[in-house]
Length: 116
Ligand SMILES: [Ca+2]
Image: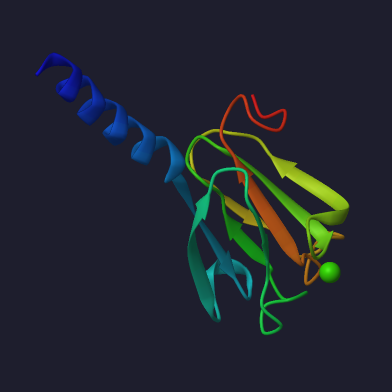
């Protein structure tokens, strides 16, 4: 009975760990204007933007207590900008090199991929 119980808790724990995701939002323009897309990003996974969103993002709502890396090119390559873990915040890319520029992103929890 005891070992059965332990197996149950282990399963729950494993499901929780492997499905950990962080919400991140991307907006077409600053100030929440235009289209937006919200994604539950799995920890440590690289996501490529669809053609409709490639080189189009001008505002980001960063994840809650996870690092966000945004990349110039697909497959998380090229120039990178990191937003450190903390409270979710609005990031305006307008007027910066990364406006209408990013093609992929990755969310990492603290302790993963150099995230603190
Ligand atoms: Ca790009």
